[in-house]
Amino acid sequence: MAFVPSQAGDVPAKDAKPLAEIVKTLEDRQLGMITEMEFDDGKWEGKVCKAPDTCLSLQLDARTGEETKRKTEKSKEDTPPAETAALSGILESMASKGLGTPIDVEWESEGYWEVEVLADGQKKKKKLKIDPVTGDVRS
Image (cartoon, rainbow, N blue to C red; front, side):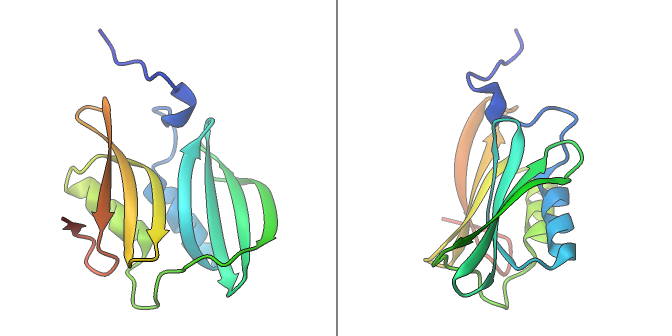
């Protein structure tokens, strides 16, 4: 029997772009530091901060990666330090290590990426703490 998630809108469709590609597109556009990305209700939602107190909330089409909605907001988001590796590279590294399919990424003020992945054949969600420089899983 095939796995059918209870909240299908929270799991990317097979033809959705991988999060690493979505993030790479945002990095190339140089909108600011990505502080979070999440798959929700059939789309990627993210937050990108350029100024210390100004961020963009974005919605992106899951299949094309095109921006469908943008909102500027005042925010006191913690952002990754400058020496942090590109998030797209970290996500690609996670995929190559077989750690699961990332569906939620958030920068934590303690100095790591918290990444929620679908694992075990896409049947379980688990959270990983990822080093922002090396991309390794922290215990």
